[in-house]
Length: 102
Ligand code: HEC
Image 1 (cartoon, helix red, strand yellow):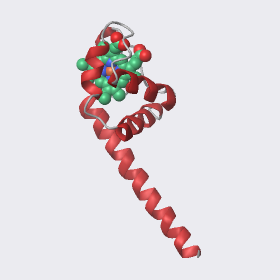
Image 2 (cartoon, helix red, strand yellow):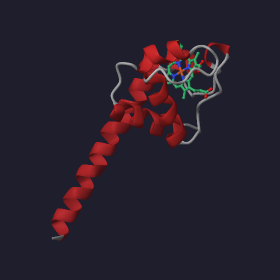
Image 3 (cartoon, protein in one colour):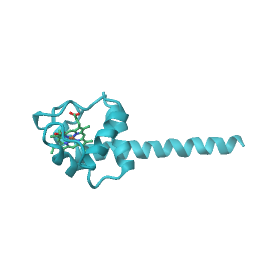
């Protein structure tokens, strides 16, 4: 029984690493250009710096951009184009990654 528990723990740790890795490279390739490597920049001079905000808020915003429902500074379309091809799981992983940024 204990062995199974250990195995589950190892597997879930492996997966969280894989996810973390994916989110970091996704961020680098899809987001860093505008929001900065550390999420501190105001994208296109308008957005708020996104680092360290709660994952729940960021996920909600990303989903709303994807659905075309968020347009805070009249540049929502720009964001929609960035997140359109990303899955829900990818948006969640990105949101968690951004929340963990220091
Ligand atoms: C081409 C530049 C550009 C890229 C690339 C980009 N963004 Fe944005 N982002 C913007 C702009 C401009 C806004 C403001 C949109 C608006 O009018 O609401 C924004 C807004 C946001 C916000 C809301 C910030 C606020 O002020 O509340 C979040 C969160 C966000 N982006 C995350 C991301 C993530 C995650 C990615 C990568 C998948 C990404 N962005 C890629 C330009 C960009």
